[in-house]
Structures are given as C-alpha cells and as structure tokens.
Image (cartoon, rainbow over all chains, first blue to last red; front, side):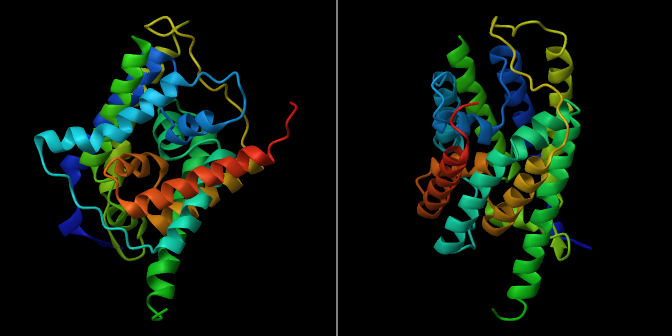
Length: 148
Length: 138
C-alpha cells in the first residue's frame, strides 16, 4: 500500500466529519430521525402515504443549498468526475437500488449506524467498502491498466 | 422549529461534506484505491462524524421523545440478512464506479453540474425500481 500524501487532507476531512456528526446529532436529538441520506430521499419517493414528507424536503433543501452558502464565504473545491455518462447512469442505478435494499448508505450505516453500535450497520459498511475497493481496483488496475 | 432544525441539519451536513472533500468523486475513488496510491482522508471523515455521533446516540437512547418533543425513530436491532449484504455490496459497486454516494451527489447537484444531475436522476430511478418491486400489501 502506497499512501497518497499530496492529496491527504487530514484536518479538513476531520473537521468536515465533525460537522457531519453534528448535523446527524441535530436531526436525531431534535427531529428524532436518522440522517441517512438514502433513507431520507427514499422515504420521499416511497408510495406509502403515511410517510411524513416536509422534514425530508427541508433536510434535502439544506443539502442542495450548501454549495451556494459555501460560495458566500469562499470558493468551492474542484470536483473531478472521471466516469462518463453511461457509467454514471449505471452507477446511479446501482447506488439507488443497493442503498434501498441494504437499508442505508455511507451516512445511514457508516455514520449513524456505527455511532449507535449497530451490528447490521457494521456488516453493511464492511460490504459497501469492500465492494467499493474491489470496483476501483478493477476499474483502475485491470481495465485502465490494460488500455481498455 | 422541527422544520427549521431539519433544514439547518441538512445545511450543516452539506457544508461538512464539501469541507471533508466528499463532493469530489476523484478524492472518494482515491480513498477506495487501497491497492494503488491510497488517500486515507475519508477514514477521518467517518472517524470525526462517529466521534460526535456516539454521544448523540448514547443520549438519544435514554430519551423517550426528541428534545423538540417529536417521536424518536431509532431502528430496532435486527439480524443481518441477505438483503442487507447484497444491497450493500451493490451500493459499493456503484459508489466505486461513479465516486458518488447519495449525500455528496445531492450536495453537488446544488451546483447545477450536468454529470451529477444524470447520476442523481439514475439514483432516483434505482430507488423507484426498488419501490415498484416491493409487494403492495404488507
């Protein structure tokens, strides 16, 4: 394993993580809800009529407006998307389906679930990290390395 | 108040994701590239978030209702099943391929970037397919 020191941003990432933890704590302690993004969004598009929707809309609105709020005080960091449109459609479908079947994503299982010491969330996190490692390995070191 | 706190939580969450570097798919893939040159930053994102979250969940487990008197929706402990494992494995493949998980994708959609919009539409499509495949009566 080779560490990518030039791209390593320990303090910004730790501080960002603390903010994410504070946000998840706010939603839990004030609203009584789990800040799992796939669950918040999934509950919004679910057909069940008994799902309260307004808090979901407002939480997601907060997410969407974050870049605008950021530009009021600074410049947004760059985002490099190496996947092409076809790959992104495929990736999006897998993320949408997988997070709903798996009942959570990086935030729901990886942050909230692990914070509540849930065994299911630990298993889920190990699964999506493991398949994420494997996927990037195949894309970067098998397909791209062979010039595909 | 509850609606205001939901909005504030979303905003703080989104700013945290940008600061953490999670909205850059190349950085996320750099974290997932453990067999190449590995950027460990995102381990610190989860570490920082869990550090704070541990206190909040410990507190919430002793509460009957939220601090704003809302019911607490904390998932009951359930056993690990095949759906959890297969679903999470599937999610990881999509995450590695695109470099986006749901939260950062929604935040970056706020910039109006076209590729992100395509990813989010496909993700919502995937969630809709899940809903269509659910049995109607439970």
